[in-house]
Image (tube, rainbow, N blue to C red; front, top):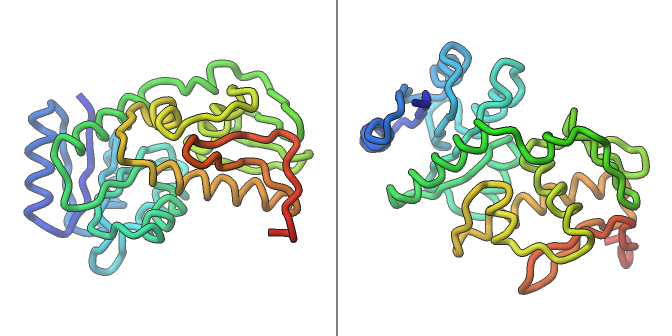
Length: 240
């Protein structure tokens, strides 16, 4: 049984999610607002946080950032459950440190699937951390023990999900990795209609890599196929 904290100011959503998670066998704690929710995250050490965005006083983006910045809570997976479904909202959510994003209204089976995937993933050791040796390919060096990637000796700290993505791309040896494959390998599920999760994470990961060496691009989009890692980088045309 896992302990799950649900933070949402809508009492109907709180009750709906609580009942269904308890039917799955989980212990559920609820909070109607962000400040108390963050306090409960520290006090209760839940196995998963399900977090709304639009709440009074402190919004969900801020709560997610605080969870990630606190050393006692920074490894707790976060599922953002919100009516905000625009791409920029997802980008903001992932930038704040969340692991997955589900838009309201949602299907209960989809919620259950994502909860299972996040709990399964957090309960197991990521594949990239089972082999702690440093791996170097081209300009890129992966350091699993501290979730760091080095681009020509410039260190970049990644989130666990970002590290798993780049590790999956590295292991493909320059071959295209389909979005569905990344969803399966990193999140543990592969819904056909959820490519936005991958797109947002790839965009964020790509920007981190390119900050280290702004003139080169290391992740290529293969349209209609997926993504491919270019270990030596590709010179960006016109600096863009």
